Length: 115
Image (cartoon, rainbow, N blue to C red):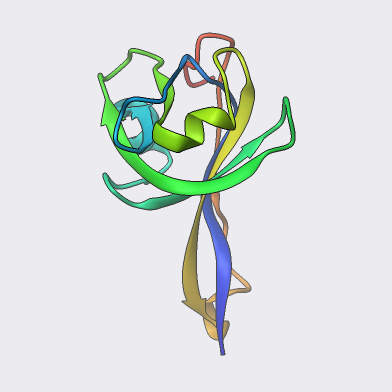
């Protein structure tokens, strides 16, 4: 039986911008995306620690080492600059792989740099 498991998350990252006029998605510092094994255009779940909002979108890379985490399009109504969020990504795996499975957890500092 397949299971949906947490593949990776970027924990308590700070939103650096919210752009209603962009066509959608969340732009994330490319270094953070690579560390969390999130591919460009991959679906991500966003959990807003600051206001409790939860939503899904897709990730696009922002400039490497910029610390950028920008909520774009309609989702910009659900987060604003300075909010703390969790960016989570999931994977479907077979039951026989569950026991040894471990997600990647990326912790960041106040400037969204990997600790």
